[in-house]
Length: 419
Image (cartoon, rainbow, N blue to C red; front, side, top):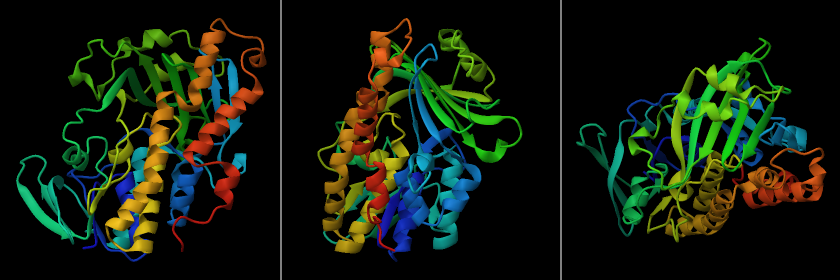
């Protein structure tokens, strides 16, 4: 086969669809025994929605996702700091979607199986070893549970779309160690409740050490007087503080964080009520990885979180991985299925994503919330007395430019993958 893809998540599946679109054969190997619609909500920014639209998936996305109309930043008192239109309401030619991560993955998976065939994704296959040779790559996959070898396959190139705990990345950088924790703990949940604001708005409230993010993620509840709300409660502690590793990714315990949010009833949003009425809550650390000096080693390269795991700030995790897949596809068409294409892809994508990783460590566009906390912790009468409109707008525009979704630039540029 031409391309071996290790990982059947959002990025690996987007790459498979993109390669099929241009006539390049591929096979996806996923370590999970069964691909299920797991996870909570994510945002997909307009430049990634453009790519999914060009893959013919707009109708499926629009049928389940919420088209985000506005993004708002608020203080810990619920006072408005800055709001801006998003997606179509901001003049983009494509929407911004808030959606269940699992729904997005299933849309991609169904499309892959429909277009590439029912066996295009091999589940229960964990990448264990690989050998990069002069003219091919050999990859060995094992059963995750038993550790028994399933198969060794060869291809022209190997792409590691296997996430933040990537086997390929570990083979390339065996001394790197675990992902980096900055002391922030996230509790994530999904709540069915009354819509807030206009029912299509994403909000962030608080500051660097205590934050609440929420947004509706499903059109399923439209017209029924309620909304499916994805939310994240974040607290930051000393990273040297003992926090048992076995607690990561466990079910959340309300007493661990709800007391800190008990007085966060803003009138237009009742944070403690949203938290208390969640159907399920999960806890995990906010982690990332340092940017790498290189992704490509011979005929093997990294993509998505395996290449550039970043903090969930600015809605850029899945979005940047989708862009990766499209740029890699373009380079494979332009230069052939070879190392030169992988290097060209990396030359474009690695510096951009490294800058986003670093900017997210500085809170990205959310730094305006911390600025308000530092300058006006007790509240304000006019935001202009704390931060000027120019400062607020410049912060937002700087991040959009860095992340590649300035409105005019995106609307006017040519497609990444020519049809």
